[in-house]
Amino acid sequence: MKDADAGTVHREFVKGNEAICHGALAAGCRHYFGYPITPQNDIPEYMSTHMAAHGGVFLQAESEVATINMLLGAAAAGKRVMTSSSGPGISLMQEGISYMAGSELPAVIVNISRSGPGLGGIAPSQGDYFQAVKGGGHGGCRIPVLAPHSVQEMYELTMHAFELADRYRTPVMILGDAIIGQMKEPYTPGLCEPPGPIDKPWATTGCAGRPRQHVKSLYLKDDDIERHNWKLHEKLQRIEKAEVRAESYHLEDARIVLVAFGTAARVCKTAIQWARKEGIAAGMIRPVTLFPFPKTLVHETAGKADLLLVVEMNTGQMVEDVMISTSHHDKVRFMGKPCAMPTPDDILAEIRLLAGKTS
Amino acid sequence: MAFDYNQYIRGGKLPHIWCPGCTYGIVFKSLIRSLDAIKQDKDDLAVVSGIGCASRLPGYLDANTLHTAHGRALTFATGVKMAAPGKRVIALSGDGDATAIGGNHFIHACRRNIDITVLVLNNYIYGMTGGQHSPTTPKGHNATTMPYGNIDPNFDIPKLAIGAGASFVARGTAYHVPALDKILIEAINHKGLSVVEIINACPTTHGRRNKFKNATDQLLWMKDTFMPLAAFDKLPAEKTEGKLPLGVLYKKENAPEYCETYAAMSAGVRQKLEGRA
Ligand SMILES: Cc1ncc(C[n+]2csc(CCOP(=O)(O)OP(=O)(O)O)c2C)c(N)n1
Ligand code: SF4
Image (cartoon, rainbow over all chains, first blue to last red):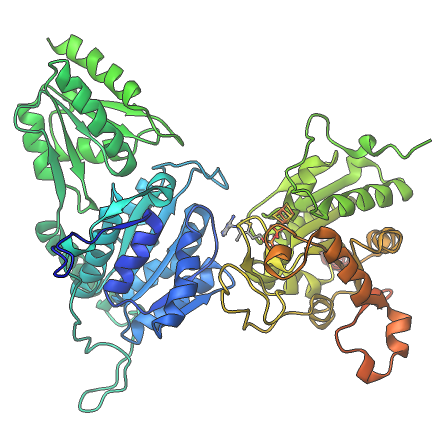
């Protein structure tokens, strides 16, 4: 977007965590609840300064259990709401996330993940993939998960998360990590439109002219809970059909196709550029939505390519979704680096090895 | 001969992580002297902590130590005590750990009056995560998540503990060190749940954002603010403004202790069953 006066493109140079805050404010989020935990403290700190200035709400709760339920309350009141946390805090929120999924309440939950299990460490990790994608909460709860790999995407996908949350009446998770949260790089706000306001007739907003609302996830009568489960399932199917996003990176002629998300995908891009300079036809599928997973793209690509190399900062989680997506299991390889970022050299070495094997 | 702290320090663990000027080291040494004074057998001692700078203390202590989840020290400590009622159990937390995320567990441990010594190292801030406000941050103080000055009302930890049913409640500071040694000895020896609030300074994330020139300045503030309970009680009401009492603030002897009550109940049940057999 051109800035009318200066004739220049307006860019911001901020940390990924701050870009999330910019995205949330642009999307009209005025209610943030949180609890401190490294490596996402920039988010509550930013919100504590700016929500008051925007006439919005920032509240530091006494725990993540309190946070997620405050979020539930504000979502039920029809507001665009957000919280953020990491590892142990996200685990504590799972009960509330399940209640929100069951009550069909929209909210954005940011996980700037750290390493685990337990207290683990604050090193970047993609160890929360299963928890995020398979439904960490009880009772078959599943929610869309977005995986930004740049500061630009931290901004854009936050806005998109609010849109999805409202459209499907569901919590949406943004899964980042310490690198993408703490890293500074420029982004261009004007490349993406914030979601417009949406009518929420289900909210507990008083109700002139309509029945009084009752927000709940409890269904005891007859087969109400079964019907409710099928309804939620049907919603997930609609999301799977319409909301898959993935980046195809040098896929056209690729013989060796990397599959990676978030920070790992950034590093893969460099390795792929280097490999191509050496004449190795490497490319990448980068799932942007981890749930819904780009199953069709993975399967079609697996059919054409020699090998798929799944690269993750864990000991192997998304690789299971790759296996579920395609019947070409013999073509799938895995490279993992738990709780640390692989270097482009590490990945290039693996690509070379595979290229040697396939030639 | 100089006091040998090393007898209670786990080999190879020093240097510690605490910042220059942090007063946690003072508390660490006071605790070691207190354990030595009561001739505490290290094998019979479990020290349990949550998460935070304060909670790193047990890592340096040569005892049976557990570093647990944020806020949950007292639940782990309760598990240890119920599993090994004959052992000495000390739980250690920061103000955030004990009264924010762990606030629920704190009042329930007090209510049960289980024989655990709870040390709450209150530095008025979340130190480890970089200076967010805690439930004890004074009104008006700056914190990274209270950039316009803290508006949250704060807890008085001893009053909270007394209200919840603890049978021994005391307050010490990192400035009044000989008094702290005495308080810790009495607290550890007390049977039932004992709470000691220990006032500390975090120059890194609290002091420097709140007009304290340095750590010494914060210690001098402790000197001016806290006074022995007897002296505090003698002050006319208008002079107590900004002052707080120090020492043992509440003590109830012979309050039923939870492990003993449980054991008695269990013995009664077994006796009845045997009578029937
Ligand atoms: C469930 C969970 N939430 C948040 C954190 C992050 N965290 C670590 S220590 C801490 C607070 C520390 O403050 P305090 O208990 O007052 O101790 P201090 O560091 O000041 O000694 C927080 C919020 C965590 N480890 N686990
Ligand atoms: S941050 Fe504060 S509490 Fe933590 S070690 Fe440093 S001075 Fe002590």
